[in-house]
Amino acid sequence: MHGLFKAITISHKKASLQLRGQIALNEEESKALMLKIRESFDVSEVLVLSTCNRTEVYYVSENNLGESIIRLIASQKVLNSTEVLPYFDVIDEHNEAVRYLFEVSMGLHSQVVGDLQIPNQVKHAYQWAADVQMAGPFLHRLLHTIFFTNKKVVQETSFRDGAASTSYATVEVMETFLPLLSNPKVLVVGLGEIGEDVCRTLADKGYKNITITNRTLEKAQKLANELGFEVADYQFVNQNILDADIIISSVRCESPIITKETLKNKTLAVKYLIDLSVPNSIATDIEEVAGVVAYNLDEIQRRANEALQRRMEAIPQVLDIISDAIGEFNNWSQEMIVSPTIQKLKGALEQIRKEEMARFVKELSVEEAEKMEKITASMMQKIIKLPVIQLKAACKRGEAETLIDVLNDLFNLEKQTV
Image (tube, rainbow, N blue to C red):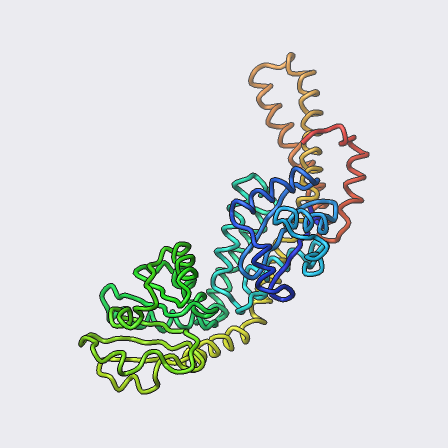
């Protein structure tokens, strides 16, 4: 297995949002791609990871299939493969591909470092691979090692502390209000990049009772259908604002759309407003209205920047944890090379033992035969112990192939089946 793990990747580092959107694969498309790869190429295991920021295929094969898999994706998405090829990176070296998947899964390569969504996205990709029987012993062990490593990163570092993106910081601020409100109504005004990110973050965290409104009704309806939110007509935005308990505004406008005049008919209930717009979409004097608490983009960004700084400072710790995990995983991976030989050797010795037992057992009583069975079985265990120890040690020295060849010649193991 060692030396056979490879990957291809397209991400925000090289590709535009538009191109990433064209390449992105949903669950059905990911599973179809894995089955097509198995049908078309000599691969034993495949993992497809596709998010808004990256689409990646990890696979186990003796052959370097990167360019062929990229062309397959382009064909599936009806794109010109020659045009998309330059935006992909191909990783054909085993150790580099293993480390890359570890680092991606921890969020080190995310647009927002330490992205809180990526561990679940990797889990979904793993589940899809298992669903179509494309996750074998190597991926099972690798992914479970990654999940364990992620828990260790959370427990031992500050890498996942706080909200390091504007959308997560916004929701984090909103969550400070929730204990003070009973089943609050949340209104998101404006669906630019930040507004849409906030909506997706709210959905990822399982929040309900969310209404979205946007100047373009079609865009609001599409996003609401996807996330299970309600839609309000933008022409009634002032009334929607009065009806909501929490308003998150990211409208692009020349002057504020939410002013003291907008709230002149508000009830006595406290209303929380978060302004993510530049220029401001909420008047700076809005807190002069009784029962209004307001946050602006600078305050949200300060929270996000502080969290991001803590994450950046924790990166050396995260890399050390990853290196330790990879070391342990590689020990297991290397031992997989000699596992078939060990099983064949055990089979060959067991066959010799049984043949010799068969020659003499007829001359023995039942009691004597039972004793002989125990004695010879014990002898076999002791005989095989040293070769097994030597094989595992040879793995760590990178000399396993030589010893495997010697054992194959000595015991004619090529004829043995595992």
